[in-house]
Image 1 (cartoon, one colour):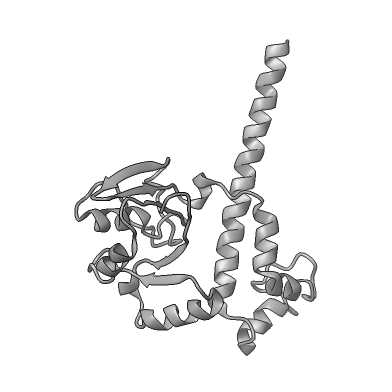
Image 2 (cartoon, one colour):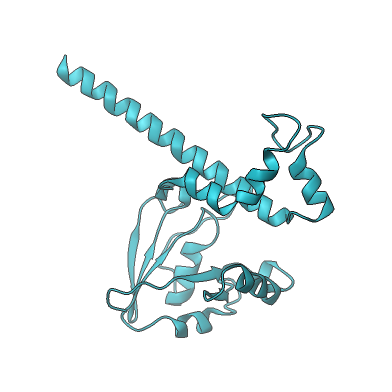
Length: 206
């Protein structure tokens, strides 16, 4: 691909939904012009179609939250186990962060980079992008009865009301909550790293 970059959306674990094509149609409306591939690393469905869409000698970077199946997809593309994987915890549907650093794999005529989950990978300028992407949810939250509404059990919650009435898609809200949680975790780690760096700096000066 030379210096050009191209984004693809890969719906991993397509075997876990009843109608993957419906999700593809949904995304086609949300992100027009971006190719979407439903793939199951477990059954192999969609892997060949995705592989055919990846230009020879290109470099592929897999980015997504922990547990979405990036390492499993790497293995499916390779046709063998090259990246370590672990199961997702049933309690909170989160991965166990098997991949803790970027790894480069040579798979036939492709270079595939398997990255850590969003928590380890980092979300630069995350708050701004989160607000821009989910501006509709932010606007709803501002009309909740309580300023610190958690959108769970409080009365007068505009977000829950919108989900109940169907004006806000529940899955979209779940995506917002998940990304917000990842962002808060990343910010906490950055703050802790800055605190330790400052502490070390003070000790050196002393």
